[in-house]
Image (cartoon, protein in one colour):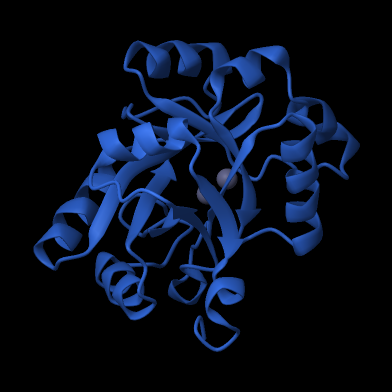
Amino acid sequence: MIVDLHVHTNISSRCSSITPEELVARGIGLCLDAACVTEHSTGRGAQVNYEYARERGFLVFRGMEVFTELGDMLVFGWEEDIRYYLFPFADLRREVEARNGVIIPAHPCRGLADARHRQRHGMTEELLESIVAIETHNGAMTRKNNEEAESLREKYSLKGVGGSDAHHVSHIGRCVTIFEEDPSDEEELMKALRGGRYRAAYLEEVRGPNAAG
Ligand SMILES: [Zn+2]
Ligand SMILES: [Zn+2]
């Protein structure tokens, strides 16, 4: 099952122009099996997209992306409107663990070349204890940046996921996660993410260069 694990839409992400209509049409057009809507600091956009897509036969998983002092985190199993610019990682971990949810650091090597950001991207023990995978394939990052994330994944023997981080319809599906299982809702998705039977990929490497055009 091929899933774009990281998409922003214009419902709750001002930085994205993707409409629910575009997400569904593009998802179906690319033959994706599902997409996760992960808006910044709220689960509302994911819910709107989930309902819209369900009526049209496309599967949307509901997640969110939370900015913490340890970087951006993709979160499944916990939804809340976060009113702070930065949500403390310890608080996020407590909330997510209380609901048996899942945390995955997004683009863990973004800003690594920038000394000011370097520290916050270190894989601290606290972080390693509380995540199931890291995002090694992010469609908005450079190949080099994703290769660094892949090295990080190897170094710590973690699992890797892929998502486009799309903010424009043409970017949907650039990076994906290929699951051996076929999760049909968030509970099953989280179970699959914990189970570890998946890998990250660039869609064009799975399908050939013209498929994603
Ligand atoms: Zn992010
Ligand atoms: Zn994002």
